[in-house]
Structures are given as structure tokens and as C-alpha cells.
Amino acid sequence: MSIFERSSQFLSKVRISGGGRCNVTHALFEPREFTSRYPRGERELISPFHRFSASDTVAWFETRGVKLKTEEDGRMFPVSDSSQTIIDCLIDEAKMAGVRLVTRKGVETARVRVEGGFDLRLSDGRSTTCDRLLLATGGCRSVGGVELAQSLGHTVEPPVPSLFSLHIPAKWLRALPGISVSDAELSVGKLRERGALLVTHNGISGPVVLRLSAWGARVLHEMNYQFTLRVNWIPEMREADLRNEFQTRRQTQPNRRIVNSPFGNLPARLWEKLISNAGISPKTIWTSLTRAGANELVRQLRATELEVDGKSLNKDEFVTCGGVRLREINFKTMESRITPGLYFAGELLDIDGLTGGFNFQAAWTTGWIAGNAMAKSI
Ligand SMILES: Cc1cc2nc3c(=O)[nH]c(=O)nc-3n(C[C@H](O)[C@H](O)[C@H](O)COP(=O)(O)OP(=O)(O)OC[C@H]3O[C@@H](n4cnc5c(N)ncnc54)[C@H](O)[C@@H]3O)c2cc1C
Image 1 (cartoon, protein in one colour):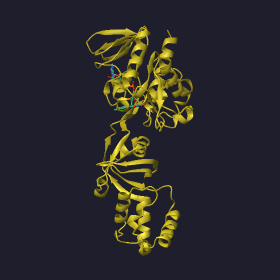
Image 2 (tube, rainbow, N blue to C red):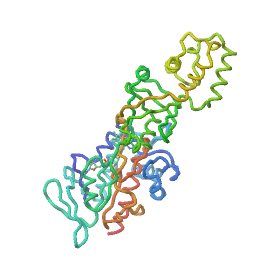
Image 3 (cartoon, rainbow, N blue to C red):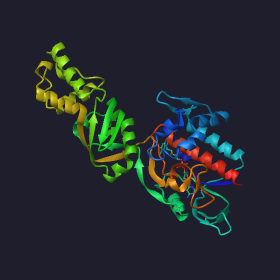
């Protein structure tokens, strides 16, 4: 068995993943719950995760001497905190299994042979043949793998980015870089996500933004990343709770400046800006808050409207939404339903997950199933 890698080294994405530490998987051990982290692939991955789940990944690496640890947010990394440990483990295992590892040789074309199997043309001009072929060429923004899949009869859902942060030109927001809000709710049309938000030098990022960008990858692409985003900075309080709290403060701290008494866990500087956006003077005290001021403050807290005018790739992890159409694959074996003997694994499929180890887990699981099925079909 041979693996052809067109670049000079194997597993280069593993190397840079998780900031060089490789977020191998996520400590969620119930397959159905695990699949809920996949905007594309949720249904198809249920059965594969029953066969090779996050706990199997942990056991697989541990049996080979690589222990994983779990961080507070559930992300799992090698205890060495180095992606090199994962690379070494995978390469050693492949060598022990007798796999021929060939770098700097890409597969340029693949053709089904009349007598069965495939003819491959390689980037050095040579040709070779194989009985079974696994395509695991990664995200489909690089055309090579897509063309191979298409030439072998497959349909590819068009690629668009997933997992990105949002550009927001509003000056008042850009004046707050580094500020984080532990629980905010973002909505655009029918999309709605809740979680921690981080203000960056050119907009917003953080888990809630990445989730919105993953679930909304296609819709936001269709809008050319230009839309109005609504932010509820304090979703744990309903409108009635906010108004009751205003009333309480009018009574308990009538002469205190509103600007000096933020709500909930809102950072003081953000609160100050929201007060100012609501047209309330920094000198206003609670007892002087007018009905119109209170209404506007509620609106600012629960539905700040922000114009988004672009996006940037999240540096820590990004993936492609799109890829080989899932109904063309048999998920029991990862074999093509169109071309017998052809298998798929990883990001080339129309599967992508949220950040946190879900994308690697999809690659480990689909790779494990494909490898086993290919070995059995010998
Ligand atoms: C910066 C960054 C950090 C990330 N961090 C994490 C993380 O911590 N946790 C996580 O779960 N996910 C992470 N991801 C996502 C994860 O890396 C991918 O989902 C995963 O690598 C997909 O695996 P793959 O084998 O399908 O593709 P890849 O890892 O992209 O591997 C495909 C390989 O195929 C080679 N290739 C392509 N075409 C050909 C051809 N025609 N012939 C021969 N070789 C070819 C490519 O050179 C490449 O080496 C990260 C992504 C990025 C960009």
C-alpha cells in the first residue's frame, strides 16, 4: 500500500493545528451529541461515530503511547502539548504497517481501468495502478482533489469558508479591542447563536461568532458577508427583567450615575458605549432615566444592530464547507456508491464541524472506516 503526498511533508495541517498543539478530538463521548457539532454531516456521521468515536481516538493514541488530556472547554490535546507527538505516532504506525510513504508526488489524474482498479498519473509524469483508491486530499478549496472526485463521477458541493470572524466598521466597537463578553447572542435572519464573544481590532470573534459562521456558512456567503447583525449583550435577562432592574436601581441607588453601574458581567467600557449609543449622557443618574432613555437602553442591550462588511479567517482553525456530496457515499465503508473501489475520508467530503477537535475527529473516523473496509475487501 502506498500513500502519495504532493507536498514535501505529511500531516502539515496537523503540525500547525491547535496553535502547534493539535486539538485531536473533543471530550464528548455520546455519538449523537458529538454529531450535533457538525453543520454539515450531522446525520451521516451518527453511525460512523458509533463505530469509531472520540473515546476510540483516545484509546487508539493511548495504546500507541500517546496520552491525551482534556482542557476545561472539552478540547483534547496530547499531554506533550506538541502536534509533533501526533505526527510521529501516525507516521510510525503507518511504517510499522508496511505502508510506503511517498512525498512530493501528487496524484494528477485517476481513471477507472476496464479490468478493474485505477490508473493513476503522478506529478512526476509516471503512472501507476491500484486496486482500490482512497481520496483524502483535504478541504476542497484546492482544486486537485475536487477534480479527481469529479473525474470519477462524483458531485462536489461548491466550497465556501466556514469558521471565520466578522469585520464590523462601527467605530465605537473598534474602540474596544480585547473586550470579551462571556454570554452574548447573535442573530441574522433565522440564524441565532449564543456564547462567548471577543471584540477584535476590526470586528468580532470568539466561540459564538465561529459557531454562527459555521452554521451560516452558505447563507452568509450568499450575502457576500455584508449584512446587519443583531447582538443581545445580555441574553440571560429578558426585557421584563431589565426593566425591573432599572426600577430597582432607581429606588436603591437613585443618585448613582448609570454609567458607573453596569449590568451583569458586562465590561464597564462596553456598558459605557451602550449608554452613549442610547443617547444617555454619562452624567445621568438612575432617578433621571427617562422612559425614552430606558427604552433605548433596552434596545441597545438586547438588539444592537451592527453592519458587517466582511470576514477574516480564524487563525486557529478553519475548514471548508462543501465537498463530495454525502449521499454518493456508503458511510458503512466510506466507499463511493458511484465508482466501486473508490473511497473517501476527511475534509474532501461535504462534512465540517465546529472548532474544538471535531474536524480531526471526522477525519480520524472516516479514515479508520475506509482503511478497515479497504483492507477487508482485499
Ligand atoms: C490552521 C488550522 C488549524 C486547525 N486546527 C485544528 C484542530 O486543532 N483540531 C481540529 O479538529 N481541526 C483543526 N483544523 C482542521 C483540520 O486540520 C482539517 O479538518 C484536517 O486536517 C482534514 O484532514 P484531511 O486529511 O482531510 O486533509 P488535510 O489535512 O488537508 O490533508 C490532505 C493532504 O493531501 C495532500 N494532497 C492534496 N491533493 C493531493 C493530490 N492530488 N495528491 C497527493 N496529495 C494531495 C495535501 O498536500 C495534504 O497534505 C485546523 C485547520 C487549520 C487550517
